[in-house]
Length: 392
Image (cartoon, rainbow, N blue to C red; front, side):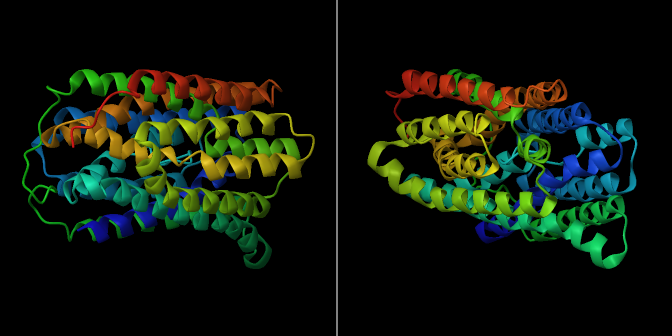
């Protein structure tokens, strides 16, 4: 069961890795502007938040398997929708309803469902390690996917395709990945994902702590939304004139650095604790983001962003493990969803703001604002939760 989840995560991350880079290029090729890139990214994140909220509110009434199967089919339909449409409003509708992910992290409805499966399939001692493996696989295959952002250029050069058509091919591939994920989840058991058969329940006992975490996570996600990968790629295109191939290579190495660092997260967490791992790896990453905004040339900017990539996601497995450890087992699906929903809603506000800043010529502002807000989040999280003990 866990193997299927990890393979599905790898496939989805691969598709997300190249879509985040190609999305702004696709919209620009269709004649849309920088602001439209931000607005469409906002629509994707708002839709993900709505779907995740529905899972958190009513998901305990259904099997995890059914919800994952529906999400896989939705991913397939999303790819076909983007491949066949050009006008902004239809694309906005597909973006809102579908599963397109413009960010470096997993903000889709898949994540809380897969987290629930993982949490129920292991004990507290191994949970952080398994979450780290899940995050590592996602980062690694997102990096590999980023290299695939060079494929449209190859298709244009060797296949006599227009750039719009070459980009559409990649969205068809995204749809095919969605169907493959659906097929993988057909093999999940029809009973609840928790092998110990703990019935899912809405939040009751852990409601206060979950909502406090959700509030803090939302600040972090709002800041992340300002510099989602699609907008960071747009910044590199506009500020330094990077090609799709060059941008793909950068995001590959940044993703590889992220994946490697996440393997260290369980070891660091055992040494200094989950909360300290989340905070003390995050602050340096955000300082690097701010420094990149003022870099005088592309080499130094990419160096700062690579260092940021090596540190910025070490908190992800620790965060997932921490949320699962401070709630009761029956509350885990609801906790995963209710911490994800405010994050998605807050992140959804960021891309439009970032796109507006770019459109008005304030090229450094999104990186500075995002980095500063993230540091505020780190400090607030440490102050609020450094003494809160896990239930297991």
